Amino acid sequence: MSALKSIPSDQIVRGVVEQVLRQIQSGKLPAGNGSIQAAVKAALSPSAPSAAKSGGTGDGVYATADEAIAGASRALAAFSKVGIPERKQVIDCIRKICREQAETLGREEFEETRIGKLEHKIDKLRLVADRIPGVEWLKTDAYSGQYGIALEEYGAFGVIGAITPVTHSFPTLACNAINMLAGGNTVVFNAHPSGARIAAKGVRLLNRAFQQAIGIPDLLTIIENPTIESAQAIFDHRDVKLICVTGGPALARAALRSPKRAVVAGPGNPPVVVDSTADLSNAAAAIIAGASYDNNLLCIGEKEVFATQDIFDELIDWMTKHGAVRLDKSQVDRLTAVAFKTGENGKLMVNKDLIGQDAAVLARHAGLEIPASTALIYAETDESNPFVSHEQMMPFVPFVRARCVNHAIDMAFEHEHGYGHTAVIHSRNLETITRMGRRMNTTLFVQNGPSVAGLGAGGEGYASFSIATPTGEGVTTPLTFCRKRRSSTVGSMRVV
Image (tube, rainbow, N blue to C red):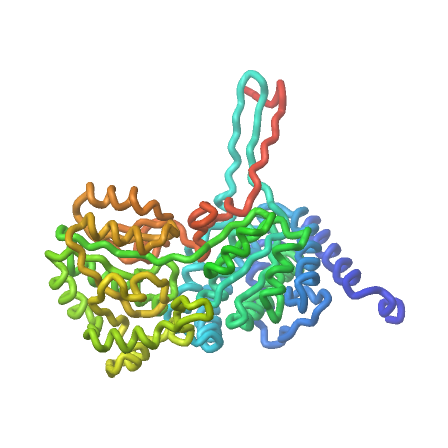
């Protein structure tokens, strides 16, 4: 024991890890699905350590950006020596924890952040378990001919710095972890301070499972008490090779100013257009489903509706029939006065205290008592109302009358602000749908369904909680976080 005391703890950890890896590679220690089960069981065991200390315990939680990046760098050195099967094992650990612990982790996130809806916090973790793409996306392209053969494969960037939002703290972290680890990277996270506790707990759970499964600590690391300064330290660190940011306009601008390559999921203000050919009952039900999901915290959620004059009143009636509650003009004025504040620069800002609150809470500010179960409130407003032009993230949707569908599309284009994020239309006219799709030029364009269908919830396709609009990658996948590499063999290896 006296000899061990003289050896630094990080060297002891590395020695143990190397021994475990040798046992896995020699077949003495199984690394299959059974070991994943054991890993997850151990990670969730009440006897597992509940807190991490700075300096290399392997559960990924560190005091500073430098320490967290150092931990992720050490993990990268070990992770780069294992293959796709081991990557799949760690991803299976993430899926299993998100699926089996969805209620517990969703509740803890809701209790910490106090925004959104508990049932949707749980749903999002199940979505991560079932719909986020993993190693199956890593396909090799081969080209062969008289001059030999060329292979194009997807390789890791290295250590990725990821910034996660308060709106979906652990779901975004888990989603990014699947995508990034599938590509062979390791990750250092800087969570939003209001969701930092659940993010750190998630990193601890996942790392314990990873160590049990493949014997590598710190595949994911996180700064326990994140700040703007720690985020900037990640942006600036020489060992961070790629940045992924999911957040608001200021954070997106900061990432885009970084000299490193950045994958940026920026703001949105998704408009909805409804024309005279639409199934109005379906349109109303879809608007309620999308705009009320997690109290409209999703960046893809319906934020404002532009409906043509000829069907406007009928659409409003369908909104009420499907359970939404309508505010009158005086109530809208009262809510608007509370929901927006004038900032130091003289510009209107969303009142953060109302973001993600229930419809009944918003209605109370408008002077109206409604059932707590109400999913959405709405009202007719004019185009100048701040709810139309601001991404407010509340379960209130303004409806604006349009002279015709062209006028509706024009207003939708103006109030989407060129973010290129998400737009929705309800129409049976294919020419109108096509025209709006081309005009809006958004990453997600949903027709005749709720916005969430654009991420596979009631629609087709894979999901992600990072939708990179400013930088163009779109709905992120493992390939988003890979370098494409080519290997050319000249004059041989073509066997036909």
